[in-house]
Image 1 (tube, rainbow, N blue to C red):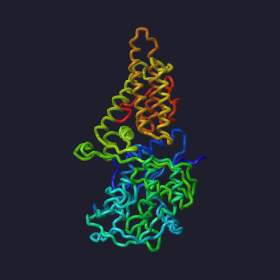
Image 2 (image 1 turned 90 degrees about the horizontal axis):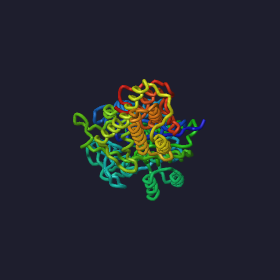
Image 3 (image 1 turned 135 degrees about the horizontal axis):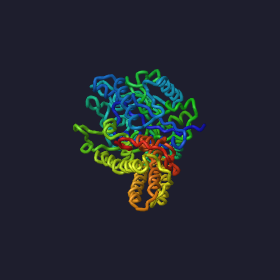
Length: 526
């Protein structure tokens, strides 16, 4: 059996619930690719984890007067529930505080790298808050990125994706607002410069966006950094080095090796191909630190990285009922359903550029599903009930314009395969093609409705019904990666199994005599 294609998505920090930006970023898009490949019969492993040990979790706990583990566990449950409700189905979600053997595994890997001098100790100036008596790292410090000047915390700059750590300009304590003082601090680092040649070769062979390539090339030109992999603190996985027992493993390092733990790379063959989904601001972890660790371990892993930009929220237009910002995944899923939300975030996906969330556009998405998709299906099911007693007629697909429409639909199937596939993945294009398929089928139905009014119509009406039913059957496969809930309801109505391969051959009506079971409500969305 061949090794699976490995798909990962960035582990979210468990300091809050998922919001619309998370769904528009890595998670729904990665699920679309996973569903398509599975339907095509290809082995897939789709994994992620929850970043329970980020400093933002501890910061939130301190502000709320709670324990960090309580915050992490509460939001871990909420996040996994949001994934489930949005139809994002992982094979494995690493739970750092629950998975057996996780902490020891991470510490052993860390210790191996330290023993090989891949991880080394350095003494450098680092921000310290005298008021809180705390070293400022990660979410505990805010300042300006020394590379691009954007506002950033002490982990990664979300604007240029470079590590910030101790290099922030004008650091300020996020807990009390006091300016940070720079004191000497001895910590553990992973220097990337000794891996320059291997990293350069790896990046040259990696499929990526021009912006990601620009990050790699600028890092090589400026000199590869030494990445902090530990910090003084009480929250997180303890550093397993005697002189640093009061330190914790850095959250970025942990998020990277979390993927390796989830795959189990040290006791089974690595995949021939890995695809990582992340926001550009998190790209350093996937694109730089992960291959550096693998290279240091003597492992070669071909990678592709799909990065998305920021999905911005316009506070003026994003408000829901009660005057509160309606951007949380749970609220939007409850109000609009997974079909509408998934379709919308894919259509608005911030790919190559930043896009903006607006409720009026989400409402338009709901209207498109209602007035085009559901309206056509309702008319089709009504026609089957009234003209055929609710069963599939015994007639070959046909009608005025059918041959031209069938050729167009075959081309649409090929376009969908391309848009869903890893070689030219473009979920925005998939949404546009699906809309075209439904619009063409609806137009075909309107044109041929007059067959019933012809005095000598004979059985001319029945082929137009089976023609439209064949499009409906195709959608149970073609729309499955984007809107699995609606595709499942449609398949149930047609007495079929959803989620078949996205191929032209899916365009075939149900067997004659099958009694349809249309839902009482909308098929797609609600």
